[in-house]
Picture 1 (spheres, each protein chain N blue to C red):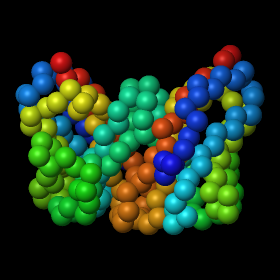
Picture 2 (cartoon, one colour):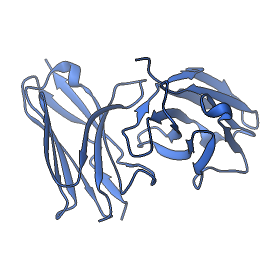
Picture 3 (spheres, chains in turn red, brown):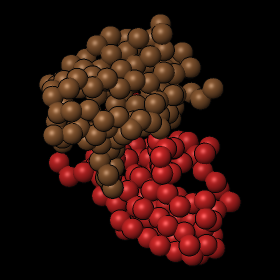
Picture 4 (cartoon, rainbow over the protein chains, first blue to last red):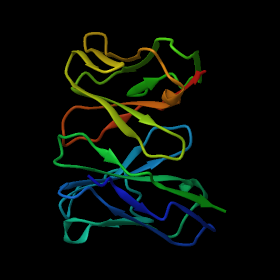
Length: 113
Length: 111
Protein backbone atom coordinates (compact mmCIF):
# COMPACT_ATOMS: atom_id res chain seq x y z
CA UNK A 1 0.00 0.00 0.00
CA UNK A 2 1.46 3.33 -1.05
CA UNK A 3 1.74 5.89 1.73
CA UNK A 4 0.74 9.53 1.88
CA UNK A 5 2.65 11.49 -0.76
CA UNK A 6 3.63 15.12 -0.30
CA UNK A 7 5.49 17.63 -2.42
CA UNK A 8 7.69 19.51 -2.47
CA UNK A 9 9.91 18.12 0.32
CA UNK A 10 11.61 21.46 0.92
CA UNK A 11 10.72 25.06 0.11
CA UNK A 12 12.53 28.30 0.85
CA UNK A 13 10.77 31.61 0.25
CA UNK A 14 10.98 35.18 1.42
CA UNK A 15 8.41 36.67 3.77
CA UNK A 16 5.30 38.04 2.06
CA UNK A 17 5.66 35.55 -0.81
CA UNK A 18 3.13 32.81 -1.43
CA UNK A 19 3.65 29.04 -1.35
CA UNK A 20 1.57 25.94 -1.99
CA UNK A 21 1.90 22.35 -0.81
CA UNK A 22 0.35 19.27 -2.34
CA UNK A 23 -0.84 16.03 -0.73
CA UNK A 24 -2.05 12.73 -2.17
CA UNK A 25 -3.57 10.55 0.57
CA UNK A 26 -3.62 6.78 0.79
CA UNK A 27 -6.06 5.39 -1.77
CA UNK A 28 -9.56 5.07 -0.37
CA UNK A 29 -8.95 7.25 2.68
CA UNK A 30 -11.89 9.60 3.10
CA UNK A 31 -10.39 11.81 5.80
CA UNK A 32 -7.44 14.11 5.17
CA UNK A 33 -5.62 16.33 7.63
CA UNK A 34 -3.06 19.13 7.37
CA UNK A 35 -0.78 19.72 10.37
CA UNK A 36 1.87 22.30 11.20
CA UNK A 37 4.88 21.05 13.16
CA UNK A 38 7.19 23.72 14.53
CA UNK A 39 10.67 22.59 15.54
CA UNK A 40 10.61 20.90 18.95
CA UNK A 41 6.80 20.68 19.04
CA UNK A 42 4.20 18.08 18.26
CA UNK A 43 2.04 18.49 15.16
CA UNK A 44 -0.87 20.93 15.41
CA UNK A 45 -3.99 20.38 13.32
CA UNK A 46 -4.71 23.12 10.79
CA UNK A 47 -7.63 21.63 8.86
CA UNK A 48 -9.52 18.34 8.50
CA UNK A 49 -11.46 17.24 5.43
CA UNK A 50 -14.03 14.48 5.15
CA UNK A 51 -14.13 13.67 1.42
CA UNK A 52 -14.19 17.20 -0.08
CA UNK A 53 -15.93 18.91 2.85
CA UNK A 54 -14.26 20.75 5.74
CA UNK A 55 -14.84 19.14 9.15
CA UNK A 56 -12.62 21.37 11.30
CA UNK A 57 -10.64 24.47 10.35
CA UNK A 58 -10.82 26.21 13.71
CA UNK A 59 -7.03 26.49 14.01
CA UNK A 60 -6.37 27.58 10.43
CA UNK A 61 -5.21 31.23 10.20
CA UNK A 62 -7.74 32.05 7.54
CA UNK A 63 -6.36 35.49 6.78
CA UNK A 64 -3.32 33.86 5.15
CA UNK A 65 -3.88 30.11 4.93
CA UNK A 66 -6.28 28.31 2.61
CA UNK A 67 -6.81 24.68 1.71
CA UNK A 68 -8.95 22.73 -0.67
CA UNK A 69 -9.64 19.13 -1.51
CA UNK A 70 -11.31 19.05 -4.86
CA UNK A 71 -12.90 15.73 -5.90
CA UNK A 72 -12.23 14.35 -2.41
CA UNK A 73 -8.75 13.00 -3.18
CA UNK A 74 -5.71 15.29 -3.51
CA UNK A 75 -5.41 18.42 -1.42
CA UNK A 76 -3.45 21.66 -1.56
CA UNK A 77 -2.54 24.00 1.28
CA UNK A 78 -1.58 27.57 0.44
CA UNK A 79 0.00 30.37 2.45
CA UNK A 80 -0.28 33.93 1.16
CA UNK A 81 1.47 36.06 2.31
CA UNK A 82 3.99 34.07 4.34
CA UNK A 83 5.32 35.32 7.68
CA UNK A 84 8.53 34.38 9.45
CA UNK A 85 6.57 32.41 12.08
CA UNK A 86 5.23 30.10 9.34
CA UNK A 87 8.62 28.36 9.18
CA UNK A 88 7.71 24.77 10.04
CA UNK A 89 7.12 21.32 8.60
CA UNK A 90 3.69 20.94 7.04
CA UNK A 91 2.42 17.39 7.39
CA UNK A 92 -0.45 15.76 5.59
CA UNK A 93 -2.18 12.71 7.08
CA UNK A 94 -5.08 10.53 6.04
CA UNK A 95 -7.32 7.94 7.61
CA UNK A 96 -9.92 5.54 6.27
CA UNK A 97 -12.62 7.27 8.30
CA UNK A 98 -12.44 9.79 11.12
CA UNK A 99 -12.12 7.32 14.02
CA UNK A 100 -9.36 5.27 12.45
CA UNK A 101 -5.62 5.85 12.98
CA UNK A 102 -3.99 8.59 10.94
CA UNK A 103 -1.09 7.87 8.59
CA UNK A 104 1.34 10.70 7.88
CA UNK A 105 3.40 11.76 4.90
CA UNK A 106 7.00 12.95 5.31
CA UNK A 107 5.99 16.60 5.15
CA UNK A 108 7.16 19.76 3.43
CA UNK A 109 9.85 21.67 5.30
CA UNK A 110 9.21 25.40 4.80
CA UNK A 111 11.81 28.05 5.57
CA UNK A 112 10.90 31.74 5.45
CA UNK A 113 13.75 34.21 4.98
CA UNK B 1 -1.61 23.58 32.28
CA UNK B 2 -1.10 22.11 28.81
CA UNK B 3 -3.55 19.45 27.73
CA UNK B 4 -0.74 16.93 27.12
CA UNK B 5 2.62 17.02 28.86
CA UNK B 6 5.59 15.01 27.62
CA UNK B 7 9.17 15.23 28.81
CA UNK B 8 11.19 16.29 25.74
CA UNK B 9 14.35 14.54 26.92
CA UNK B 10 16.76 13.92 25.33
CA UNK B 11 16.95 10.39 26.69
CA UNK B 12 20.08 8.33 26.05
CA UNK B 13 20.24 4.62 26.87
CA UNK B 14 22.59 1.71 26.05
CA UNK B 15 21.55 -0.93 23.55
CA UNK B 16 19.43 -3.64 25.16
CA UNK B 17 17.98 -1.37 27.87
CA UNK B 18 14.30 -1.12 28.69
CA UNK B 19 12.98 2.33 27.80
CA UNK B 20 10.01 3.98 29.47
CA UNK B 21 8.35 6.97 27.80
CA UNK B 22 5.46 8.79 29.43
CA UNK B 23 2.77 11.40 28.92
CA UNK B 24 0.30 12.99 31.29
CA UNK B 25 -2.89 14.71 30.25
CA UNK B 26 -5.58 16.87 31.80
CA UNK B 27 -8.67 16.19 29.66
CA UNK B 28 -10.64 13.30 31.18
CA UNK B 29 -12.63 12.98 27.93
CA UNK B 30 -9.65 11.51 26.07
CA UNK B 31 -10.36 7.88 25.14
CA UNK B 32 -8.09 7.11 22.20
CA UNK B 33 -4.35 7.04 22.81
CA UNK B 34 -1.56 6.70 20.28
CA UNK B 35 2.20 6.57 20.15
CA UNK B 36 4.01 7.73 17.03
CA UNK B 37 7.69 7.36 16.17
CA UNK B 38 9.29 10.11 14.10
CA UNK B 39 12.70 9.73 12.54
CA UNK B 40 14.64 12.83 11.57
CA UNK B 41 13.16 14.51 8.47
CA UNK B 42 10.35 11.94 8.29
CA UNK B 43 6.68 12.02 9.14
CA UNK B 44 5.27 10.43 12.32
CA UNK B 45 4.74 6.67 12.03
CA UNK B 46 1.99 5.04 14.08
CA UNK B 47 3.38 2.53 16.61
CA UNK B 48 0.54 1.81 19.01
CA UNK B 49 -3.18 2.61 19.11
CA UNK B 50 -5.23 1.90 22.21
CA UNK B 51 -8.75 2.62 23.32
CA UNK B 52 -9.56 3.44 26.96
CA UNK B 53 -7.51 1.91 29.79
CA UNK B 54 -5.32 -1.19 29.77
CA UNK B 55 -2.23 -2.63 28.14
CA UNK B 56 -1.40 -3.47 24.54
CA UNK B 57 1.67 -5.35 23.40
CA UNK B 58 3.23 -5.52 19.94
CA UNK B 59 6.60 -7.20 19.71
CA UNK B 60 9.10 -5.23 21.80
CA UNK B 61 6.60 -2.41 22.41
CA UNK B 62 4.01 -2.21 25.20
CA UNK B 63 1.56 0.65 25.64
CA UNK B 64 -0.18 1.27 28.95
CA UNK B 65 -3.06 3.61 29.67
CA UNK B 66 -4.14 4.56 33.20
CA UNK B 67 -7.15 6.82 32.81
CA UNK B 68 -7.63 7.19 36.57
CA UNK B 69 -4.19 8.83 36.79
CA UNK B 70 -4.40 10.44 33.32
CA UNK B 71 -1.07 8.83 32.48
CA UNK B 72 0.09 6.82 29.48
CA UNK B 73 3.34 4.96 28.92
CA UNK B 74 5.27 3.28 26.14
CA UNK B 75 7.82 0.62 27.04
CA UNK B 76 10.47 -0.55 24.61
CA UNK B 77 12.21 -3.81 25.51
CA UNK B 78 15.66 -4.78 24.23
CA UNK B 79 16.15 -1.35 22.72
CA UNK B 80 18.11 -1.13 19.46
CA UNK B 81 20.03 1.72 17.81
CA UNK B 82 17.29 1.72 15.15
CA UNK B 83 14.84 2.80 17.88
CA UNK B 84 16.64 6.16 18.05
CA UNK B 85 13.94 8.68 17.13
CA UNK B 86 11.47 11.12 18.62
CA UNK B 87 8.43 9.49 20.21
CA UNK B 88 5.18 11.44 20.22
CA UNK B 89 2.13 10.64 22.28
CA UNK B 90 -1.24 11.70 20.89
CA UNK B 91 -4.78 11.44 22.13
CA UNK B 92 -8.36 12.42 21.38
CA UNK B 93 -11.84 12.05 22.78
CA UNK B 94 -13.46 10.89 19.55
CA UNK B 95 -12.84 10.49 15.85
CA UNK B 96 -14.34 13.89 15.18
CA UNK B 97 -12.13 15.86 17.55
CA UNK B 98 -8.52 16.79 16.77
CA UNK B 99 -5.59 14.72 17.92
CA UNK B 100 -3.64 16.50 20.64
CA UNK B 101 0.07 15.71 20.54
CA UNK B 102 2.77 15.92 23.16
CA UNK B 103 5.99 17.70 22.28
CA UNK B 104 7.80 14.43 21.75
CA UNK B 105 10.69 12.72 23.57
CA UNK B 106 13.97 12.36 21.69
CA UNK B 107 15.50 8.93 22.34
CA UNK B 108 19.03 7.83 21.50
CA UNK B 109 20.01 4.16 21.84
CA UNK B 110 23.78 3.82 21.97
CA UNK B 111 25.43 0.66 20.57
